[in-house]
Amino acid sequence: MISREQDDVFVMVKQHEHGRVAGEFALHFKEEQVPAGKRQEEVVWAISNHDRGWIDLDETPFWNDAEGAPYSFIDFPVVPKLTFYKRGLNEIEAETAYGALLCSLHFERLIEVSGEQSPELTAYLKDEEERRSRIHRELEQSAPISEGELYYDARLLQFCDDLSLYLALNEPGSPKSEEHPWWTDGFSGTEDFSFTSGRAISAEWQDASTLLLEPFPFTGDVEVAFNIRRVSKTAINSKGIALAYSETPEEECRITVTCRPESPLKAIADSRMAERNREQD
Image: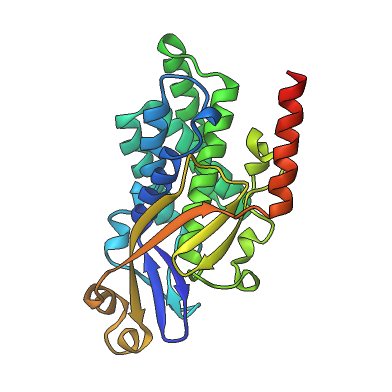
């Protein structure tokens, strides 16, 4: 579960709902940036389903007594989380082995970033390393994987996951000063995309239904919709988190992601540069 706290409610988004939005972003990513290959559909499907292991867990949220808030994907207990990570990866591998390889690498990166350590995590990481080695061997016989392809697809998954999380963890329309700290320096890893010229993609709300990105990574404006629940703290206190959540109706949150308008001076400079390039050609 993805959860952010407001004065009187917890705004909650299911993980698989967030994953579906990430897949929408992957589908609209600039085509000229996507390496040619036979696996594009597999990659988009895997990004859309990378959090499918949470589907059953998110039907009934759990309460974290220590934090006085619902458990989220950030602080959910390690042992059941790893069990459902593995279940989700098994389901993904049944559909696409390359997608499972990609998602397995993604979860490994998230674990490394978290800094968590435990015997269960060590065993999980060993098992996943063996899964990835096996998939590499199997695909080597039919569709070998290049290092560039896998590196690029991993960056794409990371960005689409991050952007979808941005929509869930930030209040739409909120000022830049209230941005979640994960993204104050932009989206990590996006400096590697050629169109960014070494800059990290950054985001800022134009209003409650429009998010601006710069540099812009998509073929055009992307409109996404996802369901949220605003679960009342009063209801949680009187009924418990499970019943309060189940009785709270879903609301649709609809966001358009577009490019930041260029300043007139930048537009003039770009036009002059393009004209000089044409003259040189």
